[in-house]
Image (cartoon, rainbow, N blue to C red; front, top):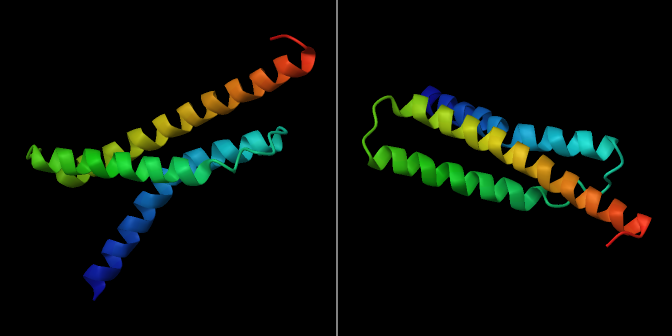
Length: 105
């Protein structure tokens, strides 16, 4: 039983590490006036979990040493990359809306 609890705790920490940065970016954008920042998060979270799972299974099938280290590194990289791409995408969307409001094509 303690092993199951530790496994669930590790999965919860990894999930928070995976989805935390993109949620923080959405919160920051929402505070700056982007009221639709939280709307696409469900799709972003699913995409991040799918990509991280695929990369972890790929690393495991390659037989890389230290599987837990690779898992944490993959989750961390996917998390930060997803947050950066999400922020870039939302900023570009906001810039496009601003240009439409100003009358530029």
